[in-house]
Amino acid sequence: QTSPVTLNGSTYNHTAVNHFYEDVLKGLTASPKHLDSKYFYDAIGDQLFQDLMNCEEYYPTNCELEIFSQKTEALASAIIGDNNDEFDLIELGAGDAMKSTYLLKHLLDRGVNFTYLPIDISAHVIDQLDVELTQNLPGLKFEGLNGEYFNMLSKAATLSNKRKVVLFLGSNIGNMPVAEAESFCAELRNHLSPGDMVLIGFDLKKNPKTILAAYNDKEGITKKFNLNLLHRINQELGADFVIEQFDHFPVYDPETGACKSYLISTADQMVHIADHNQSIHFQKDEYIFMEISQKFTVEQTRDMAAKTGFDVVNYLFDDKNWFADAIWKV
Ligand code: AVJ
Image (cartoon, rainbow, N blue to C red; front, side, top):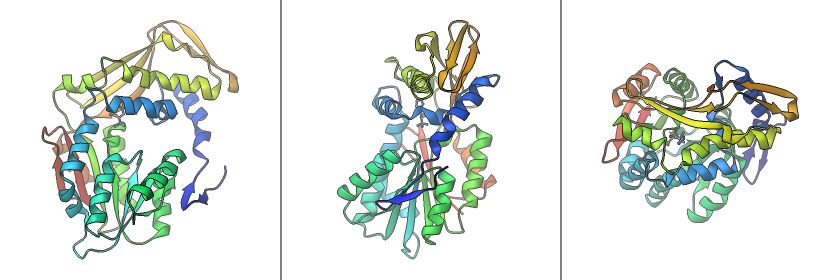
């Protein structure tokens, strides 16, 4: 393991990649088989997710973009302190920060005193943000943090003791089953202090057909997005997945709100991971569980806040009430 290095004002952490093989092997030798959707996002996966966000059926991004672009003032007012105190605005999984940029710009225009600290597992993302945001948002105080969420939150706490506002957007919380999302919020709470806030994006339960369609788009981008992880395993671990012998199977259960995607092996087959001298057997019709995208009722998210030590400050919705940005306070 190498230790984090600081370069261009950003902290880089080179340890993340080491877990890829271990996680893949653990998932593919488990019963039932599973892979971790956090590994979807290599360079091709990032592009496929961009394509998804532009496709007709995938609604969550547009809904949250509507909130950030149309309700910016309400968002800002909820997170600005009573005494206009200086604060740290930390974003978990910042990506291209497209949505948060509306908020950053508004805060700067209002003369609010804050520092933006995006956290991302991708060093490339942090580099990109550093270049683009300092150029497009003159005067923005920026501190990029490359690494795992909670490691970097601890790191952020060593950099300043200002009030913290943590953004966790895009319904990324939905990539955890409900119980795990709750322990995530509890851990988040443990990294914060009284007065600190979180702003969490939740995709809401709605017509089941609308939800399923978003994860089963006609163009087949979601399918490619899932299959790309097999491609990534081939590329990075020297495996020999025959991609054509796996089929994409998404399901949505309106009772639990769980939208799940699976890859189904269409043949009895062996896959070899050459770099590590491993063989994995797939029965015909055996599935790999790939991803959960949990949908919530507003009530459920309020319960989650109460259970994990947060008070509700405000909720903002898009016009269709398909998506909620929850603002909670410690
Ligand atoms: C980026 C995790 C919010 O679960 O909706 C999109 C990822 N997966 N289509 C989601 C995703 C399939 C997305 N998140």
